[in-house]
Amino acid sequence: MVRSFAKVHAGKVHLWLLIVLTFSTGVVDAAGFLGLGRVFVGNMTGNIVILGMGVAGADELPVTGPLVALLAFILGAVIAGAALRGQEPGWNQRITYCLGCGAAVLAICAVLASADRPLGKELFELLAAAAVAGVMGGQATVARKVDVKDVTTVVVTSTLTLFAADLPTKPVAAALGNRRVAAIVAILLGAGVGALLHLHIGTWMGLTLAAGLTGIVAAVGHFHTRTLALAPSGV
Image (cartoon, rainbow, N blue to C red; front, top):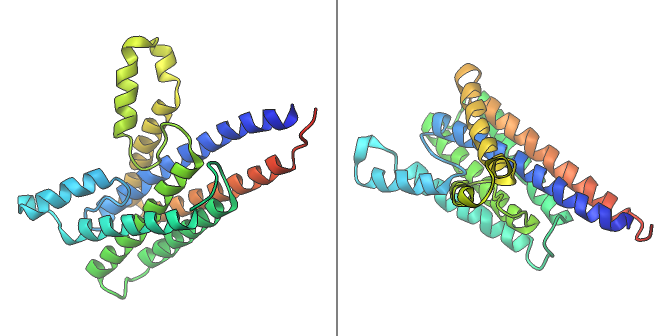
């Protein structure tokens, strides 16, 4: 009974950990778009749209940045997918490692962003956007492996569609109180916080916050999983 309860509780813990990562995605996407050359580092749909318009020559939109970020996102997802291959759905030690590495990369980018950028502004922005996009690709793969329904951490278009489609068949109060709304609100608030940090402190502060949140999620997920593994199987 104790172990059964612990498993049910684990589902709620994993949900809120991914909601925190969704908030973090909003933060880094704001940092990327406002401080790293108008590039989305988490929302690849937006990146592809910007890339398409940039290729068409619309409004002097960037091409290199979105393309590099897109390729880095794919590479991050591939690396994380290889690391998690063969693992059962749910939290495991490899997920902790993937998120820990992601937090470290974000922290390094934050430190470099707060310095004088010896590589030059444009080159630094390109490399930083690629690094952060790679982290987001890995994070998206981790979210799939944790397997919390309707929470991908990096995109909410499908989440918003499902929420709106369910409104005619569900009471409004019930619809507003589900995980889909939590994910949408999380990325919205994250983008707002990331923009405020960029405007009033600097891009590095948003990256620092994202690094800290990712590290906390990795630690909480790891120790919660260990606690679950040690839970007695009997009453």
